[in-house]
Image 1 (cartoon, rainbow, N blue to C red):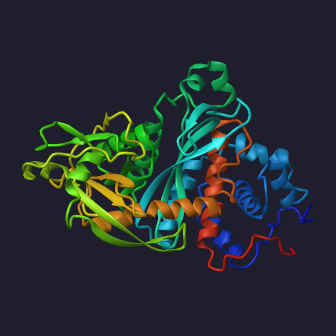
Image 2: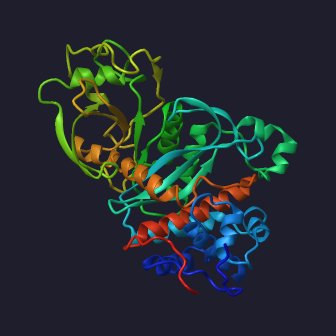
Image 3: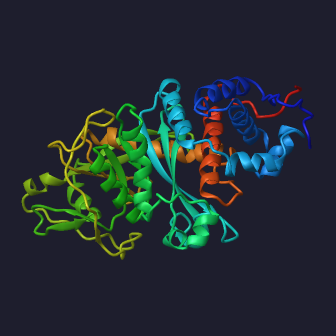
Length: 425
């Protein structure tokens, strides 16, 4: 399929999406030094939005016209000189103005791969599916409001085998400065780089991560003074002053605190299901456990999922700010454990740890911004090609994912939601 476009022309998109892409690309691609790079960047964004199905270089090139050869596009993404980091920062700044974000959300992205030559690929456990898959593991930092969400920064975890093998590292064009880090440290770096390095208004970050990833990201946020609300599981050990123990499981602390009228009903909008929902929420201020004389944490209810999980400590230190405020962590407010009961279950269904101060309803609604990202990733990010880089290089992955983020943002910011079909040029 060829659009028959004249050389140098841009394919048109349907409805308001065409204008949105033009405005957005003018704002976020300005750091590219050459005009031909800026033009290719916009063409690539348009190609991602136009191409149905697999976002291969060949398929995108076919939608962009005969002058846009797949080899030229591959060079622009994998071998060019433009830096993706200023593009990401410009995208975040643009969204500050037009989206009005309330918070950041950090979310993992598993990218299944068939071969072993794509940068960062290894066999690993996918927490989402519970299966060991050959995949990349990446982390996206999303700018989120009630209107929508868009990724603005990314981290790609590089396993030790990729960094130690000089030949493999050279083939993937991994920069010499790139040292070994854990998946959670990689995730935390994506947060700190944007939230502290770009001069943006300070906002809390919702860490929608799994297990050890969450612990390392919490440590990074605390070290940088970034307010956080982190998903944890019931096996995490937390300070338990006044319980007769130094530490107790999150589930035990919530069970001890949730009797009587402690559970607060919370109404919230679920963008995944497209309707209002209600939950019960409880907060436990960890320093205040000493004031609950005679109360000891109860055991896990029989049959509760995850009851046999091994307990493990989470390295945290006190801090405190208001939800949504621009203040620093590290105040006298300390840490708060948030628990949610939903769907009529007798045990908590979600656990969160935060250094923010606020009522249970405000904290739970902040946590639910992760649901906004979940929906937008599935409905917009996947079709925009966030997981569909077909090259093998480290730089190529980052360039593709950056421009796919721009394509995603254009969709989110388009008011009419028109399909991205080519009109006559």
